[in-house]
Amino acid sequence: MLVPIPRYAIVLILIWIVLIVSLFFDPLTPALMDAETVLSPFRFKDLELCLSFQGQCLIPNPYAMGARLFWGIVIPAAVVCLLLFGPRFWRQVCPLAWIVQLPRIFGLKANRQHQISRTGWLATQFPYITFGLFFLGLNIRLLFVNSDRLGLGLALLFISLAALTSGVWFGGRTWCQYFCPMIGVEMLYMGVEGALGNPLISKSSRFSTNLCQTVDRRGKHKSACVGCSLPCIDLQPDKLYWQQILQPGLKWLYYGYVGLVVGFFGYLFLYSGNHQFLASGAMWLETHQLSTLFQPGLYLLDRAIHIPKVVAVPLTLGVSAGLGYITGCFLESQYKQLPRRRPFPQLALQHHCFSICTFISFNLLFFMGVRPSLGWLPSILLEGTSWGLVCVATMWLCRALLRTVPEKV
Image (cartoon, rainbow, N blue to C red; front, side, top):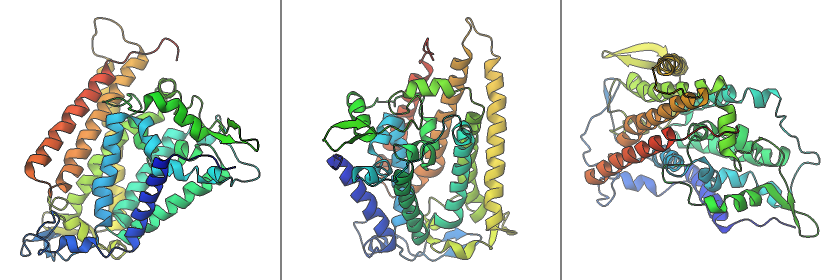
């Protein structure tokens, strides 16, 4: 007997499939770049405009926009969703969260499903592994799939197949807890249930039941939980957050993430020699990234630095992540030594540091990366969106700083 699947989940999966297919076959979006498509906000308005890259002017030829829309709209929308409504809401609407459930929904699973030991290496080293995978993912994006839609399509197809395999092999929500590319970003926002709260909070238990239960031969629901995380990140996120907040590896996740944001968008300047490389749209013209791996990866003071891009990218991101971690740990130590009228628990002080770090990283991500890529929006809408998100992020931070440590953790 099949486990029922919500209609909205079917819609999400279909949208995800259409997105992947469009990366391989897209006869529509190149027309949006044409100067004669007057109503398109993406059109090249000035064909004589110099899109500067390493001292040269790139020719603004129309291209399929799948990669640009994915990185410039879909991923930022996911991060904004985490800020507004919290990780639990995102895990309820993430298409991969439902793709990983398809084997269970259709009754397909291994004869003996494996379980992740909560005391095993993967569980105990989870923060380091998550940060390492995030670091690897950013390298892959800059080197292979940032503007190359075929490379991105293959990457998303691989991730989807990996999610399906995880659903067969492990069961439960093991993929979402340990292997999902978004789990590292989700962890940053676990301190608060979103600036606006979770609109599905009253349905959260029912939702978790749908995901973590199955139907037996008699048509009755039974638990399908494999204990991938105790406390459960979907049922008891607060308890999980406070129990793991003092894990040393989380500092790499929070402070290193800030460094990676700065390093990622800073590298675009170091690579192109032009601070308008993202805003002008020149970055998206590099549609065959494989051919650039061994070309100069840095361009400074109007001179190409002959360090191959395949070396320059991990070097830049590694240095920036290390500096972010060192800076974060130093500022944390200074914050914890400030005189206070009343003593604060160690958990509360660490929570404050992580919350401020998340606030900084969100604003850096938006103003360094997202806002420049939204130049096609009308100025009033762009400014309204920018300062609206600043206000929402400030609201999120206030909610985070006002949280108190529960008596029982």
